[in-house]
Image (cartoon, rainbow, N blue to C red; front, side, top):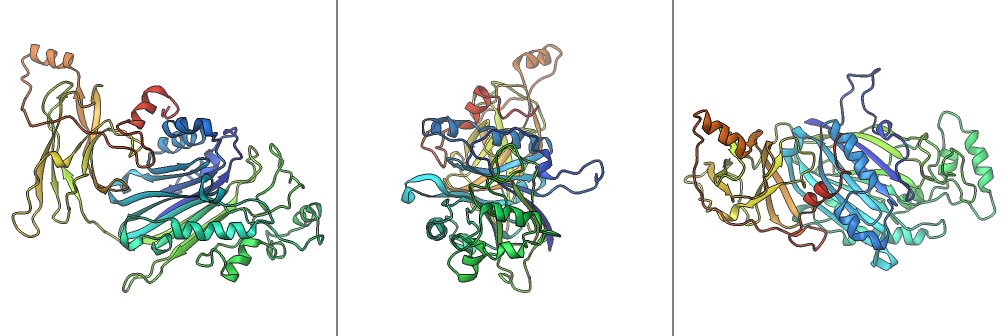
Length: 486
């Protein structure tokens, strides 16, 4: 078994903009610990990101300031945005190292609204699920009903999410069916002392007397631990020992509790493992750390972070696509933008499978420049059992590559509009301008040309919006600089 390192962040940002450096939140190697390995995955869950009803279209088209900041920091470190999803103020961002991208299978994102009886997305959950090295992983970020006295609503929110949150992969159609589940967010469970027994000021005084991070006496009144024990909600999950003070509610800009609310551990990271899902193999998630980051004061919540090491299968490779090297320079406007790739015998070609052209140093799997469906070519069945197949796909003239530089092909298997897998990524290849082509002709260099069948590409609609044919990533790239990596 191999080990994958997952680093989690959950933070209710209280509609504020980033006002502090976020690097220390992500625990990068420092000058004192340069050999510390980076995580394989970063999973960042935010709640109460500023979102107004009149800005919902803009929220869909352009990244918020928090997402842009995390993108800039993590993409500089070489991470790829594997998937992200937003439900109003609830955001889930999943980043992975480049070496893992071609092992991501059956990526799917979903959401469930629980605000106003399921009509509004100010409360609810978003999730991303995928398979990696033979194991299924589900990541959930939620924001449940607020206020100390609304415990029943929080329990109802949890059970609604479990019931209504459905995926298209039959073996893991429910959150709880996955090998690994990590549930993070502002769960909003409070400390529930008997009425009149203790004031907020007295709780703050008691917190100041805690020694060696032992909070057992106060945690006896934690609503979440109580409902986990009773079976009313989250009983399927485990939580590491809490050895940090309550993360809510603070006076913004300070480290002082706002005594209008009883200090509570609203922000949590829970996990669930089906340990014996495979014969002769035991899966496990080993805790490395679970803590709050106290020096952030831009919100009335403190961020909570955790790191887990999970076990996955070694040398697990299925359904792969290998691209043939592009041995010549492409010229913008040529009619022979084409790629050849070889499909392993277990690859089933779906009508929605597509090959995208990406910048060679791409940072986001949604940030394609051009694409073509495999349906435009006739894929022959294997000539013999267990034999790979080779296909050639042409891109029409003017299909989107208009800037000289280096690019890559990426093959996506997409059985439906909600699920996709990354089966192969090509090595970088060069695209040059026609001016360069003329210079090459002047010095006697004969460019190769070939013609292939082509037809205009057909745009697809984004999974979570109905802006059919609108290239959201492209619009963001050209009309907003908030995703630039500088």
